[in-house]
Image 1 (spheres, helix red, strand yellow):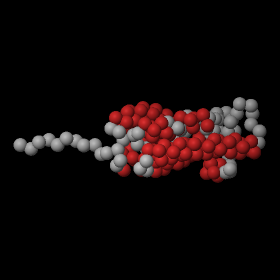
Image 2 (cartoon, rainbow, N blue to C red):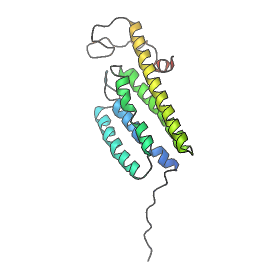
Image 3 (cartoon, one colour):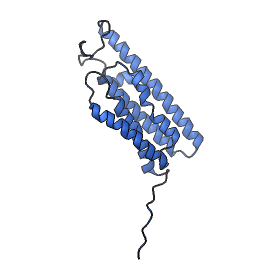
Length: 180
């Protein structure tokens, strides 16, 4: 009689575990992008589903030790973007958030693949601070661009309902993101 083999999960040092630990970050980033004007490119239902899926997935990944607590903490940074990019047109907000998630992902992979816990923490701290600075800078550059476009009525933002839309000739999002 053949015995049933016990299912073994991959170790937390595997590449699959490292890549799986990025899923909560990307799901929460998608969830954050659903708020805004004009209508976001991601449906609201998908954003809500990605929010709850990220919570469930985080619990499973932490339980299986594929998602270290420090990496989970960094995965929550997209919620800060809600405040940094508040009232910004989704034409700019969505790529800002997704590009910040990409930078965080690269930093999280490098940090998890480093051998030392101290190095990992320093790398995660560095990438978190860098993304927060870049996102604040991008938001400031967006509002400077809006000021250069001319006056808007009180309480009106570009692309908001009942307000003038962006024309399409504005500064591209990647220029605003990297402009010092």
